[in-house]
Image (cartoon, rainbow, N blue to C red):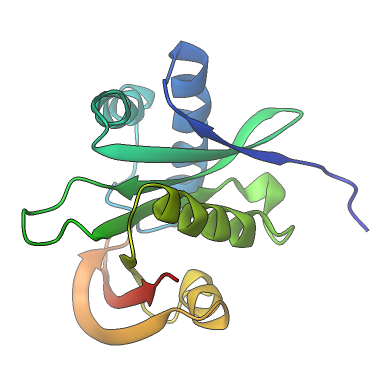
Length: 175
C-alpha cells in the first residue's frame, strides 16, 4: 500500500513557484499521452505561458483553481471557468483536470473533482459542464461519480503525438 499523502487547496493567487509546479504537471500529462489541448513537444515556455493566462483569470475572478500537493509540490489541478455568457450565470466549465503520473490511482482525481464541485457551489454555481477523451479513464471516473454523459464527437481533438481522438461531453447538476 502506498503511503503518499497529499492535500487540496484553492489558489486565489498564483505565484512563480505555483506556475513552475503547474507547468510540471501539465508537461508530465502531455508527455504521458493526455489530450489536453497541447501537442508534443510541449516546451516549458508554452506550459508557463498557459498557466500565466490561467493566473490572470484567477486574479480577475473569471477562473477558480484547485491544486493537490504532496511532499514534492503540486501533483494535480483542476479549474473552473466561472465567467460565462449573461444568460448562463448559474454555470461553470470544469477544465484541465490534470494529475501527475507519480500520484495516479491514489484518489487525487476523485478528490479534485469533488473539490471542484464544492468550489463551484461556493461560487454560486449549480451546473457544471466538461469534456474529456471518449472512453478514457477520466470518462469512466466522471461516470462513476455521477456525471451525466451528453454525447460523443468523434475525431474532435488530437492526441499530443498526433492522430484524432473523440471527445465526450458531461454535465453535473449541483445541489
